[in-house]
Length: 292
Image 1: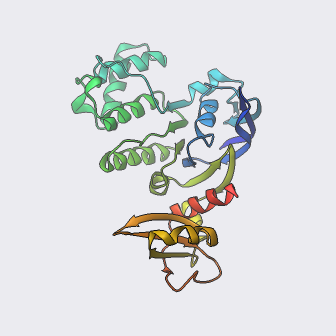
Image 2: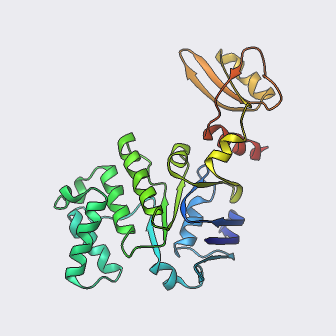
């Protein structure tokens, strides 16, 4: 269990990135879901020992993640939003370099480790290719490979699927699920709801540095049973609907706007029909309520 208690972080200029954030995260893939600027990356950097909070505690397996940076890094695998790769290195050379940085000094041991990692992330065929020519998905898989060095118990991936095509995103989800099956805690920080619904056993919604909800995806969807309604309306009707109803999303479709509304009491108007709830409905409803 990863226990985070009352974390606060304020940057120069008075920007409050975290406001007493508290979470208890069990083994598995945990999705930290929130809009840009919600505090996701700040929390990830604190857990990865790259940033110190103003106050608060984070503990896992008896280790204080904030005070014991060396102990934390020994059990940590981290894939930040942007990570440096030497474009002239091959995939195997890059992983060999990362393995040295993580203390694997025996050459034979490193060679076995690099082979195993490349196989695990499906890059064995590209082992001699320079990483400067890698696609976005290949770069992300190489990033995951370096994060796995040392069999980490806590793995943090920050906005990992931005820019990936659907096939690469699905492959990445499978990798995360495989890592979590080894009794590790995998934290997936993202603003893409589909990532969370595909792979996470639990999720937390964060906005303005505070956790709004901690729940399973199934529980989140079940909370909206018989409460989601959908209608296609003219564009000029949307403003009035938003003023009077809890509109969670609106999207242009065939010249009209498809509007999704949450109403727990009754059908909003005769134009609306019942719709199957989704995790996006839950997320957008929660975030929109917190703005009011």
